[in-house]
Length: 98
Image 1 (cartoon, one colour):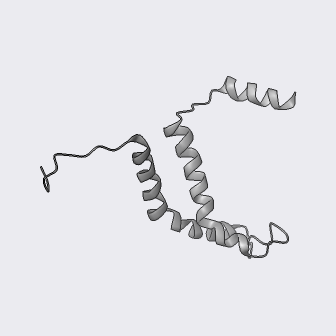
Image 2: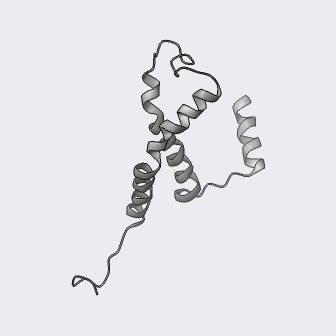
């Protein structure tokens, strides 16, 4: 018993929100370092060179890109538990062609 409370209960949505919040506060700021290393490896001044007409504005979305990738993978692998099979992927590709 701590502070007069026996324990507490969290709903699954609160746990998932906590995981995403922890990742966004601890890891997402490093998305800028990742993008900078990516640009250096390919000798790109800024992403405005790769997306014409956008200037350097896409450089401001480095951590958002990392967060989108993490959220997508987290939702599909942990929350929705979608485990693709080879047959399922081939069937999906086949449906795209017809």
